[in-house]
Length: 558
Image (cartoon, rainbow, N blue to C red; front, side, top):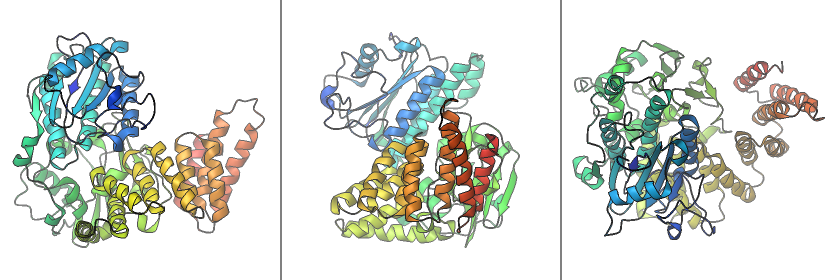
């Protein structure tokens, strides 16, 4: 913070926010308890979120992981603090300065610190940059991330997602700072025409409600799409650039409209990358009703591919699969998820991840062909929930379709919470919650707790054990994963998913075992045996077997 001992960025926001770390009620040292808040010293070391306002719970695990990555990669400490309100005798500025100084944010990184403080009742936002970082985190940049990232999401009652976007922008700048070699001219070019609100400029977020009308699902109306994927892509860029009022093609699916709003008025964050996309060369990779706008296997978040599907009315942008399959790793890395999804086979040579390779099938999978049907279901079910808020089946039906299309937490988590309260013994809310926590936030620990409850309530379902095995695999508990997957095979021996995942488990146990470990050779033998089982499964999964075979070859198992 300018003039403060410890370099810091302070962001105070009211309203909903990004969940970075959930505390456990009743824990004696839980730093998320308001009673534990003190300005005298940091309540707990090695923690990045202090959620005293209890407004960040749905993002906690993923955000905690993100903030830890910032510290490890860029040597910048970023904390987030939420408070329910401000004392009448204290301003946001005073609170921020006190937290920075007394908690010594950035102390272990030579004063390189970032602090986001969120205040719920006053609903204000303040962004300041510490002197150690102000050459890169400029005045123009601070105003930019406030208005660009927070404003549109606040209007949709989803400021938590806006803060996820803020973290992405902060990571970009953190990388510039970490790499060095920059000068004022380079930073000025990066700033470009960003919003220059001045360092520490406050934003009263409530005023945005009158500036931008709230979107509703009732406003959705289907229109004729483009005739080809290339036309859809060029039309979308033209609309985003503000020259699309004469373009009749409606190139958003109904779920894309629900997520992104008016295609002729995108948010500022989308506009910021327009120059790059308009100038970039691309290929169109197509298979039937699915197509990819592909810029090549190039690093850089703006080089990630775009996904389009052919609906009954033409080609349109598929936001559901875009968010689910194209994921941003540590800047500038992007990846495409493996799994039982369309599009992935069109991009076999790009960086890939198994982070969302869930054992999903049938009705749990989104289909672009049913996009308009989902829109009708949402409108109908939202009306029903208003009329019958205590009807478990109706609440659960709306929660489920919202999870399938990947809506934001404010549309999902309250429904799942209510469903659990209405019918405590029913297993379905726990299953759906586990799926949602992985597909939306990669929160494996959180999902594991949910699926373990599901298994207790529905012990004979192969999905529960397959999912439990996947989550242990992602968390590095390979033997636990094998134990769960063996139970899955007992329930259903025709289980190529379980066999393929066990092959990976055994291969990683082999890799991690000491060379003198007598079990090591058995791990390799078991990995190859599971590959054979996956190949021999009556319901053959050729794509999964091909991925596994390639993966084992790279590790010299074959």
